[in-house]
View (spheres, rainbow, N blue to C red):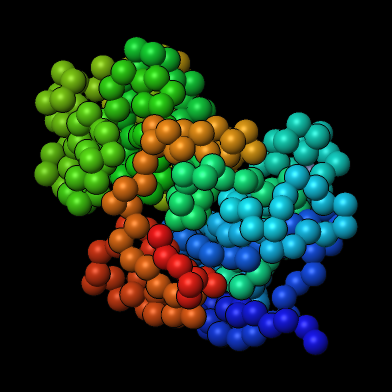
Amino acid sequence: MTKKMIRVTLESPGQLRLGEAPVPAPQPGEVLIEVRRVGVCGSDPTIFRGRHPYVSYPVVMGHEFSGVVAGLGAGTSGFSIGDRVAVIPHLVCGQCPACRTETYNFCEQLRCTGAEADGAHVGFIAMPAAMVLRIPDQMSLDDAAMMEPACVGYHAAKRGEIRPDDTVLVIGAGPIGNFCMQSCRALGAKRVLIADKDGDRLSLATALGADGTINVGRETLAEGLARLVGGAHAVDVFFDCVGEKGLVLNQILELARRGTRVVVAGVLQNGCDIPHLPDFVQHELRLSGTTMYVPQDYREMAALMGRKAIRTQGMITHYFKLSDVISVFALIERGQEKFFKIMLTVNDEEQSE
Ligand SMILES: [Zn+2]
Ligand SMILES: [Zn+2]
């Protein structure tokens, strides 16, 4: 008799099916995880609607997750049943030069669970032990699931090579922008500013430690920077946490003082329109991309969150059970209710935190 678990499958774009599947058996080197929390990512609606370039269907979504160790494959060591863990949602070749230096985001065979491979919208998932991280006792399972977007923001912040005297402007105050802003502070920036068109997101950023906010629905970036720091020339590092058609990057290139650093963390879509791109040559700007994170980011993030240098207070606006995930996408698509981070709970009948 095989034990059964819940599994939510995205059969085809827009078609989620609630079903059952056998609990997987962990293979050699794998850890079986009882899933407890799965965050809903900004990219999930893209997968849900079939607009994600690398996803084929059917697929099980869910890549921001945490849980409890429920079993170990043959030869897997370093974990005990019951350990609370965060998970790097990566499956890699393990052999290439990138993998040998734990730079898994550069592995040519990389597949992300929840996108190119089946993810955590399930009761149990088996993951390679190298992708599983025990969390500090004081860290909640909510925070452990938030480590994934937190590390996206942290890795982006590191790409900005923050120096102690830096003034930083982050554009886009969603989860990634708010984690990037806090990461810049944790890495030693003197002043961290953040811009968005949503006042609630900016209030959250202030509560999480931003030194100044710019509501681009009310003033331009140039006006906001003049008010806060005397002008755009005071900014040393810009972060574009919006991406899309390049509108934000174009504004940054127009504003940036010569010799500044620009990190693009938001995904740029096809058909970008960035007429100021040539400026980055003449103005000797340093333009950096960033993608996901590496295990070292996770280890540092566990310590930073553990000592509250990076916080999540106020980020989770909604909880749903995994079995109600269909109503989550209905809520997102109706677009009438504001949300920040939606958290799914799994296997959670006996406790909540
Ligand atoms: Zn994500
Ligand atoms: Zn590899």
